[in-house]
Image 1: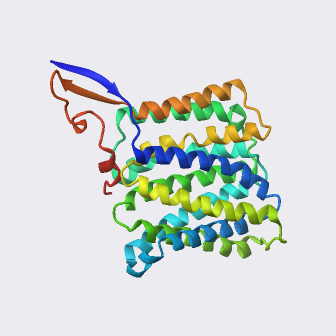
Image 2: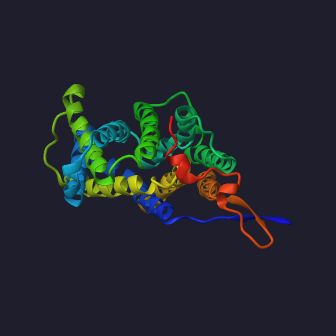
Image 3: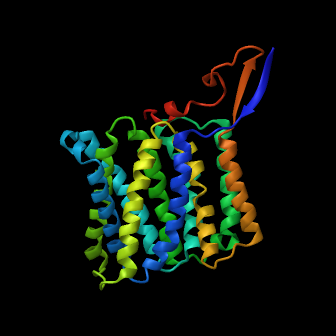
Amino acid sequence: MLHSRWSVSLSRQEWALVGITALWGSTFLIVHIAMQHSGPWFFVGLRFLVAAVAAAVVFRSTLRGIRAIDVWAGVAIGTTIYLGYGLQSAGLQTINSSTSAFITAFYVPLVPLLQWLVWRKAPGRMTLIGVGLAFVGLLLVAGPGAYGTGLGTGELLTIISTLAIAGEVVLISFFARRVDLGRVTIVQLAVAGLLALLTMPVVGEAVPAFSWGWLIPAVGLGVASCVIQLTMNWAQKSVSPTRATIIYAGEPVWAGVVGRLAGERMAPIALVGAALIVIGMVVSELKPARTPSSDVVSPSDSGEADAAEEATARP
């Protein structure tokens, strides 16, 4: 006789993504403050070039054998990083860190949709439920004011940035098992930084006067960006983009915690939304396992798609 049971667990890679999501969430307030001392494209350029140098120090021995696919993957991912972080930083000039974090999190439902379009592989049932719960939570956290007709430039730039961030998550999973981790990380960070600096004359942005207000955050976030990108590239070799996205959905929650410590307050309805985001993450990890009375059936026999297979699916 078969017995149904529910199991929930996080792998080492998934716990790593939880950690970098917390770190990621804390960066919104830092960038918002830095934007008072620097233009967005200079700041993003310096941030990611510092990250590229840090990655090159760690993986310097791997560059000798760099292949064309490492370069192409790095350029593709780096371009999405440049657009995502650049537009997000530009938006942070006029909106606060909490608003930016909540709007940015709208990339959550975009990833499984992009995955479906590109890979023709529909997400599993529990993943869809988890994404739905997280998305509803994000709507509550953002509040009804985020959906009015009076969106400013900062909000619009941040909304556009979510498309690039969703593309980054999908591309990382697409290339994860085909490229060398160290090489592609160096290339993608360098590409993001160089493209940001090249954007400065196009938009008329000048190099800012020296200030510790932009130097310390840029260097610190550069190192943090290196850690974040290395962790994403490593973890998404075995974590599917939809599952990774649910974990990343905790980003605005962490941003809200940091914002509260800085004096910001969340409305009760926003706290309900934050709880739904966390619940969505947990639900997406629930896997129905059917077991006989004496033997346990392989997880691949359940209704959920294997994460590693999903992460390496072909178009």
